[in-house]
Structure formats: structure tokens, C-alpha cells
Length: 255
Image 1: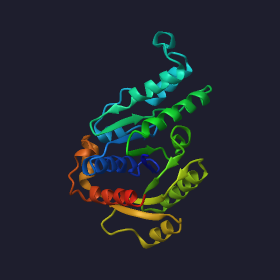
Image 2: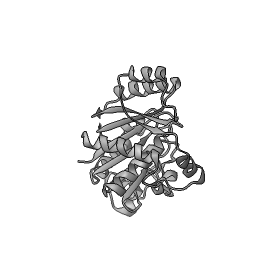
Image 3: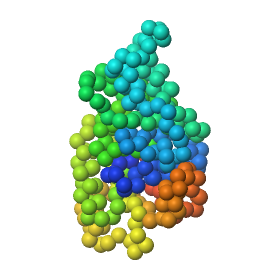
Image 4: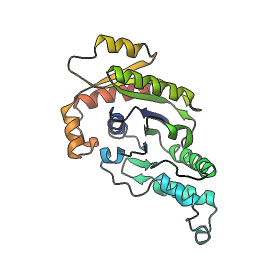
């Protein structure tokens, strides 16, 4: 059974960066294949990984709903064709596959198709020892189009008062979703050299969430982001990567 790590946080906190660094650790250091899922409609994980997205799950969904799939020509049932399309949608990138969910639903009924997608996405993820999901803040994709299980949910936030409020909102959302979460923890990102202010740390601890680790503010990470270089190429001794590496390694050890 795959070990599923879901990463959440409001936009701009660095959750996609953590997802990319987690993928680097799992594939390059553990040597394990992984499925990376970009579940944020504002998809940017492919940019962080240096991958071009050709087709998304939302493309499959829209084709199915609008009956654009050539069922007669293929000779397949809608269920079998959607399974085939999902498998083809996962882009093979060496040691990992990338699945991009895409935009949310438009007007119309998607229940039947979403149920099929959930089933086939679950089958796809089961073929990997690790699944890493980069989520939107609302985490709708977790309840709509993935299996009802997450082994570790990491909420990424900056160490600010605004970050505390956002963390609480995401925590409540996670607790309201019909999914089983094995462990939920905080990741403090872009921590300045002086560390986290005592008042902010006290408020973060008051959320009841364990702090899984702190990732320092890092000029090299920022340079990779602005230049478009894949984060998979960040040096192994980069301080931010070393912090992210420990966070992910601890999650896996605690399984």
C-alpha cells in the first residue's frame, strides 16, 4: 500500500516547494518510485519539477461529461476508457510520474465521472510505494478525487500571525473532510535567521498541531524559483532541502 503524503497551505507559503523537495528525497535518496499529484487548480508543481504538462485529469473529466470520447471507435466502456485515459494522463518522468488534476468543474453533473476518477486514481496510486500530493488550500481534491486516506498531512505556513489564522482554517477543513488522516503536522517555512518570534510560536503551538520542522529562508531556493531551474537539481547540502529531507524522513519513519 502506498504511503500518501499530502501537503497543504494557502497560496504563497511554499507548499509546492516542499512537495518538490519531498519528491527529490523519496526518488533520489530512497531510490523509490513515486506518484506526484498536483491537486491545485493553479498548477505549478510541474514548473518546480521541470516538467511540461500535456493533459490533465480535468481534461478527461470534461471530455467524459461532454461525451467527446470516441467510445464507439475505441470499443471500450466509459469506465474502461476513463481508466485508460487516467493512466495515459500520468506523465512518466523517470523515477516519478506526475499527475496534474487541473481546473475545477464547470456547470453540469460530474458525480458519476468523479466517482470513476476517484476509483481509477486510487488504483494508479496503489502502484507506487509513495504518493506526494500538492493540494489547494481548500483541499477539495482530497475528498473528491483521491482515496479516502492520507498517511501524513503537512500544513505549510510562514511563521506569522496571519499564518496562524490560515493554519487553523486549513486544520478545520481537514477535520471536516470525509478522509482518514494518519497524522497532521505543521511545517514552518521561510524561517528567518533570528528564528520564530515567541508570540507566534506560542500561537502556533496553541493550534494543537505538532511542528514537524522548520525550513529556513533560503536564497538558493529563491534563485531556482525565479530562474525556473527544477528543484530536483538543488544540491543535497542545501539548508532548506536538508530541513525538508528530515521532515519527510520523520514522517516515513513514523508510519
